[in-house]
Image (cartoon, rainbow, N blue to C red; front, side, top):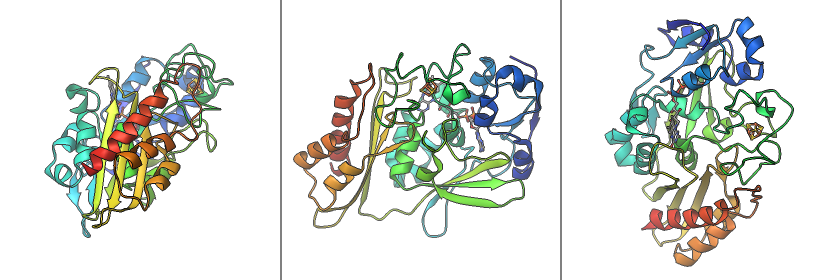
Length: 342
Ligand SMILES: Cc1cc2nc3c(=O)[nH]c(=O)nc-3n(C[C@H](O)[C@H](O)[C@H](O)COP(=O)(O)OP(=O)(O)OC[C@H]3O[C@@H](n4cnc5c(N)ncnc54)[C@H](O)[C@@H]3O)c2cc1C
Ligand code: SF4
């Protein structure tokens, strides 16, 4: 690991000023060139950031720690009944928080099922949403692929068993955040604050950036900007949310596939609105629009769930080694729907 200066930010503005580059921008420069420049990045829990530093994929001159910025880890109910989640709240503190357990049990369970107890005690929600992809070519020093500013995707014709089955023609990463799958289904928004203190808000779904918009970054975080809040809207009592995941291991690993469902079921049992989000399926959390349409206006039963499971795959284009994800997602969508209404 290269030497770098380390400092604790005391305010959001100090942290934003220090974030001279996003990690995505910094990683498109070759590590050799990066090591010669002045690049300063921010750190939350450090689980992903330190990995990149240890592998020599990211060579900043300074790391600014966000841990001591007051107020960034709060979890509170806002006026109007929505929840504000601080980006520095750890996955463990969120999973155990009574407000989340009462109002967003599916999110609390998804967080509890992510990674391992040791990691959840350190990893933050903000860092989780902003972690970089797990593609092994991306994580290896030996491959300078498209996402790192190189000229080729090695996964599309290579080892792609953990890669995308949707929107994988240019870069086949899957979005690595499990929490994002549920947060997008729940209609969460993010708040981003710049060095001047100006905040912008956007839907989390719109914050994520697919390869056709930009091949080198997974989100719309800008230099000198800090993620300062994740907001969950107040949900109507008729809304039911469920999340299911399937991995090779029960813990200590990212899922092979996960699905979050949000169904608004009116009192006569008809589904008024459906959100069906597939995780570990595409470069951004994937909205299965045909499956959502298949459920809207229907009474939810085994048949409707099975039909939506098939419809969820309508634009899937598996690569040479990941076609096993097709039946997996079909089953998970069906199960998640039945779990939501069960
Ligand atoms: C063995 C293992 C298993 C895992 N399993 C899962 C899993 O099942 N599901 C899952 O979702 N994840 C999983 N993870 C990933 C893990 O949850 C993330 O690496 C972690 O949440 C990152 O959070 P952090 O606070 O450590 O972020 P850091 O590593 O500190 O930061 C990550 C990125 O976010 C940026 N950043 C962080 N906070 C801010 C902010 N407020 N504003 C601007 N930029 C910011 C940093 O600059 C950096 O680029 C696993 C990790 C390991 C090692
Ligand atoms: S899938 Fe994306 S990150 Fe992986 S090798 Fe291809 S371009 Fe790089």
